[in-house]
Image (cartoon, rainbow, N blue to C red):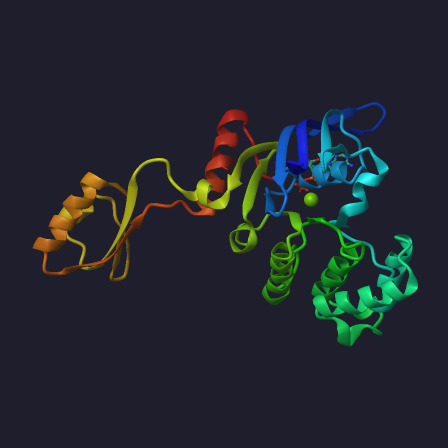
Length: 315
Ligand SMILES: Nc1ncnc2c1ncn2[C@@H]1O[C@H](COP(=O)(O)OP(=O)(O)O)[C@@H](O)[C@H]1O
Ligand SMILES: [Mg+2]
């Protein structure tokens, strides 16, 4: 088995508007997605990019207009294909009068998990998401972060191989976000495949092994994070300390206080900079590294490209 998730030229058009004024919204426009086993895949895109739509197709909650989607190499329409999938939707609905424990029990029952096994499973999951102390607390008293964690526990009740999470960190404070990201990382360490959508760049940078950037319904860039950030050429980044002089100015340095960063530079230019440092008493070499883009730069570049190509405006 090659791919845990795959879509082939997936298209989803919503028909909105009233009976008179019909409007077509192309939410997903020919998406080719492939996610391998064991990856933590960050499905990154701005609001309205088509992330939730794609996820709903994978969960068979809505149907593609054209194209196809597969889980474990099986068409998503097959009912048994989601037996090994755990899912946390974007805005999960919680029965707020249930306690954490009752909520998980309800979900265990939905999967037909025998009572004794369910009990052990629930204990384990409450511990995993750090909510054992709140097992008897009604969900209506839970904070957003706690709800997100109990939602995650719910998604794991059937011991899935693949966990699909739609914006699991959205609306959380930094502590809540870190907890959820740590849990995602642990799931990855346990060998599970995690596919989660987010519009937050640092989520991807902190836990993902793979990223797919979706903008306006199309996958603009995807792959290993390291590969995506690596620049194509042999370019370097050099960091100096000291006083900016006229000679240095021609390299378009970024200056912050004492720090001078020149990037990206070719090997040739790098030696010119070295010469300047050797000659100038006010300059000190701090660091030379390979030039790397930040994920933010890569992301914004793609947004700009889409803007140029089709006049995209962010929501
Ligand atoms: N049920 C729907 N009916 C009509 N338009 C929809 C519906 N759901 C989503 N959309 C539109 O489809 C586009 C993609 O939405 P969505 O998949 O929710 O994006 P994301 O999850 O990346 O924010 C948006 O323009 C959104 O307004
Ligand atoms: Mg969404």
